[in-house]
Figure 1 (cartoon, rainbow, N blue to C red):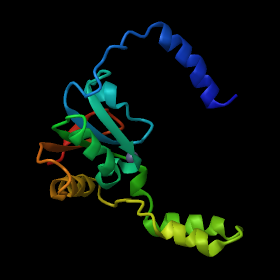
Figure 2 (cartoon, helix red, strand yellow):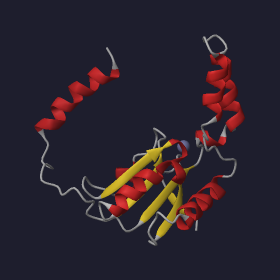
Figure 3 (cartoon, helix red, strand yellow):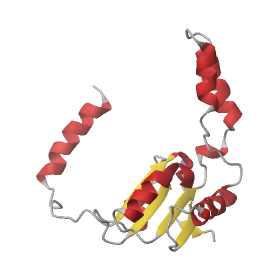
Figure 4 (cartoon, rainbow, N blue to C red):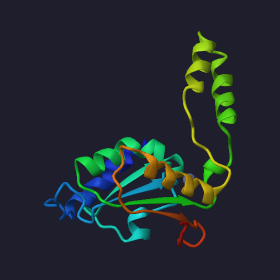
Length: 171
Ligand SMILES: [Zn+2]
């Protein structure tokens, strides 16, 4: 049984109790939240979000540059006027470098029909790991503030503690 088929079963129960079919498309609280994809974080529960409240943009590390496309759409087309960044303790992004992951990919590519292609493809991706958690939040706030494509809106950054569930403001 795949996890996807488990989802289908869970969804049947969800649909039976579903009452949120009349929500507006633009987020009611006009906020976009950029959060790491870490499986231990529940943005809705930990930040007090309901369906329809916010755009929650997730990626590895909760990196702003990776989220830029979504942030622009969120602001220009769907009216959000605040950004919140949430990185977290014990993040996987603290455990490797671009070289580390590229070396893994290249090693796997050695058995492929075109190892050079494999290596070149790996080198085009910035995986955006970081070695300083607090600095990664500061850097992402700065990245958004300095982008001409991002509106001049309040941007806050937090570190979520996976041991306590508490968020701490960085800036
Ligand atoms: Zn993470």
